[in-house]
Image 1 (cartoon, rainbow, N blue to C red):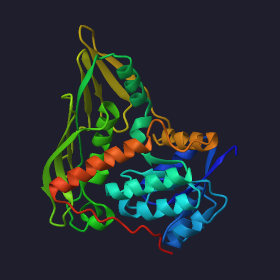
Image 2 (cartoon, rainbow, N blue to C red):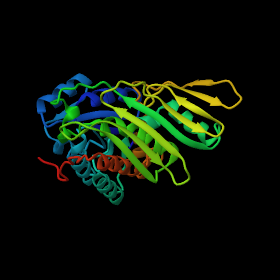
Image 3 (tube, helix red, strand yellow):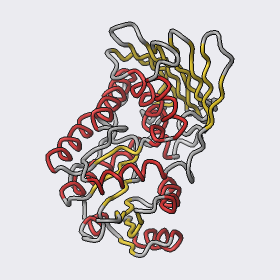
Length: 332
């Protein structure tokens, strides 16, 4: 195999942004798209120069000329599509949040490992060049021993109760669209937390509108995180160490610039622009992995996805949410 042929499942807003970045991945090509609506699939295909359009998810998984699948359906639908794709031997890039329950995430991960199929969560933050540089600085001890993470991510979302943000059936709420980002960032920097404490507000539909999350580690390290669908915030992260700190400038989940503050030194601004729309880096990671015969990423390993989903599950439990996971079997 010299080129990875990609299929897109769920031709929505995020998928439209992602497929444009295939132009920046020379050994990958988007060749097919599927939707539950044949008309929608065809319109997406025509708009993005994709040759084949399918009116069901099953059809794209049965296509022998699709090597990898990008899943961009609503969160509760990830489980069924991912399990069917793994069974069909397709490599996977699954949009964050990976699922809406820890159990479903563990089910998919177990299936991937059993089948030896490459599967990765589409947490594009970890592949942004500025974040890659930040991790190098942390590993080199640029700010000493890392002791804490602090940050926020908020948007002033529509308040219409009929909007998808308020619909639990499609994974609405702040948790799976916003909170997953700072939680994943903190887990990336500090590892898997030992304790989770959350306080927030639920909408009448039962989804979360806003929350503060405090993550703790046995050695005293902490992450203090805030997310909101009601408050527009800068979207910045700060990593604290015994010898300084690093600011990840807005918006931290796809930044171009970080600022290194070392004790006794002037601040150092470091800019590492992303390629294309910022999605090319994660597409390249999966493509490289498939071509090399790997089964998971070292940058976004499945163990980290499980750890992050466990935190999200704990937050949901503490806030009194009951996420509605989709079926395990693919319909149609």
